[in-house]
Image 1 (cartoon, one colour):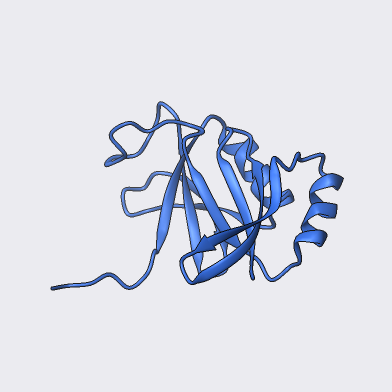
Image 2 (cartoon, helix red, strand yellow; image 1 turned 135 degrees about the vertical axis):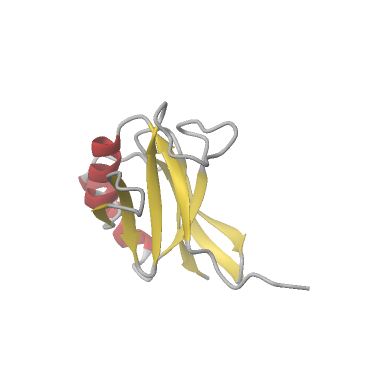
Amino acid sequence: MPNLSSLDHLVLTVTDIATTVSFYEDVLGMVGEEFTPDDGTSRWALRFGNQKINLHQIGSEFSPHARAASAGSADLCFLSETSLADWQSHLAGHTVTIEQGPVVRTGATGRLSSIYIRDPDGNLIEISNRA
């Protein structure tokens, strides 16, 4: 049977690309990148580590796309080497509310210590340290 080895990218459908890019750059330290795929359109992505998140503007999604694409429906977990205490201070400086945490969770490779916030569209963002 064939197998999969890793996740290359995922897509977030968002209400406003500029607001999303600003939040993910300023608050989470990702890098916004405009790119041009083979079809010649202009698109936006967020890069961090070896991953990226492609952004689709709600109502103007690129085909093919999720059957029920909607802003605010994602639940994402990001791993960080930065302590959660440092994240808490950083988030407070950006007036980002921590909804829950630190709490212990189970990730793909074991225990995590996590805090939860929301992005501008209401997507749930989990920031985690391996426990």
